[in-house]
Length: 284
Image 1 (cartoon, one colour):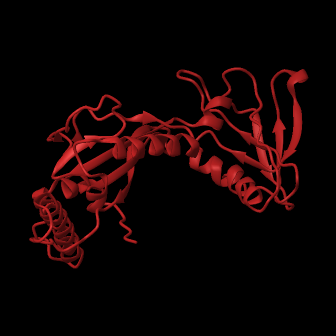
Image 2 (image 1 turned 30 degrees about the vertical axis):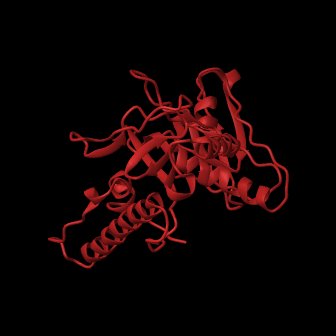
């Protein structure tokens, strides 16, 4: 089994690479846990010159997932980092031994930024001052998406804040709508390739929406017509959002026949996968 690391300042782990197609599992590598919590490794190779013995802090078997590696290696390093300590994690081995896979994993992360004004969707990262974009549904996988939406790749928090800033500037510069009277949705999508304990791989996608809702205000009939229209549209979408959340509450309490009115407005239809199913929602 995967062995936990000790709290020493220098730790060493062995990760066993899965055998390639057609290759047999090595029988000359033997591991034995020690009372100290470390692991004794006996490399009983058929070549006498290759026979070695080592003591390491942990062994990650060929069936170990990236999550197993992070739990054994990364958690303690991140905890020390947050506590103010410097640190390093090295991946050492011959070419093709899996160093890059261990350090980088297999994932992509992108962000998108949408402005919803008067039930029309505007892409804040398009950069071409284009018109509103269409909201579609892929009936094969029941996924809602914005047609031709620009998704920018990100590798760090700095990248995400960069595109957030560009989108906010584009929103303020828009001449055909009042930036203070619309909803914005900044979305971060993570696509991963995961390996199970049995060695099979599968793709997994998740998304986090950060939604800045327009202010809820009563229409002032003495105000300009455009102001009344803005307030009416905002209150309509906020009411639709409230109805969806109430309906989901009924469903969670066992009312399976309860209809959830996602399609009542663009905001709730866009956020459908993030409001229902296996999602979590937070309101501040």
